[in-house]
Length: 432
Image (cartoon, rainbow, N blue to C red; front, side, top):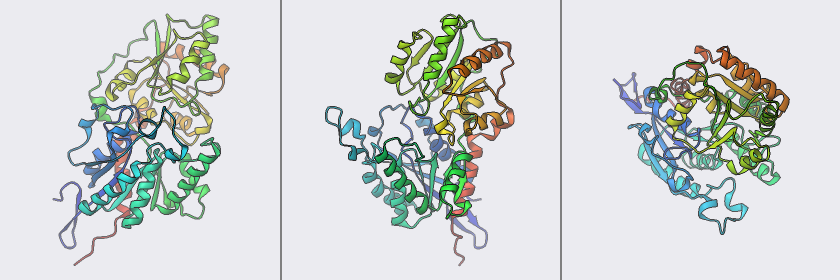
């Protein structure tokens, strides 16, 4: 029997190692980004699908927040190499200031100079069949591009979401840089992987000279094993104080809760909610400095709690304890779906989504059987939606994700898709 990470060429009885070099900035011991889970779970489940993962990541000094809670999930079959890397804002700034060119395309551009030689070392030692790099750190794709050119190996660019759009990044110079890198990556790689149907469609429209098969869809997901250790919660009626949780980063341009805060202030003024019957927890927003003054200005500090980051399993446990979960996604991200959404679906809790009804996030929720949706930028829609949503949750009539939608979103199923894609890129083993 072929061992994990190998396959048996039945024609000649030759065992061939199948390994993939995975270039990912987001990897344990980094803490605070749901993006960690994509690479971590791919690496964990790839051996079950005949592939050995070789992870090329950054030295932990480059991470602003670290923790060891996910290190135990790095499988024994996974080779991990952490290359030299710095964070420009923390390691190369003078009194908090640094030249823009020192952080292009991102603050971890120095990782490139450590990762390329480290990647070549991994290629020489382990002879991977495919290179895989993943966004949203653009430097990871620059590393993938360099190694692809130096080795000639097939290269899969995991874009997740588009690097650039009509209004992103807002800075014209940065937009030009990102668009140039994106074009080079798309045209140079062997396959592009996106996480939403809208992103695939957008890329096919922007790059009509490439075949449709150049672009593949592998969505994000949740991991059942991560939920296995989370205590079950009785499906009792909500307590007197209704708890609504948003878990994860809140980007001011893509998930701005300004209209939500205005809606909460108005509902409070009308007597519909107060500190005794409602609390919104914004867990690990990453932008408390922006959100805090907005909350204070509207006099809702006793309704909205800015809470610090938790370890991954603790964050899942909080989702399970909450009465309901909150999604924030602006219309300028219609081709994106927050990775946290799939964990929300698995948690089996009612979900209030403040997003554009025409976007991929809304479509994913509707496909899962959840229609509690309002526009993120509409105070009045949010007021009406939140009032009705709270009543439905208390009555036990608020929709939750269907079992079919939940099972289809498992990380193990997503990894099987990735392994099948990698298999198509391997050249047939030569017969002797």
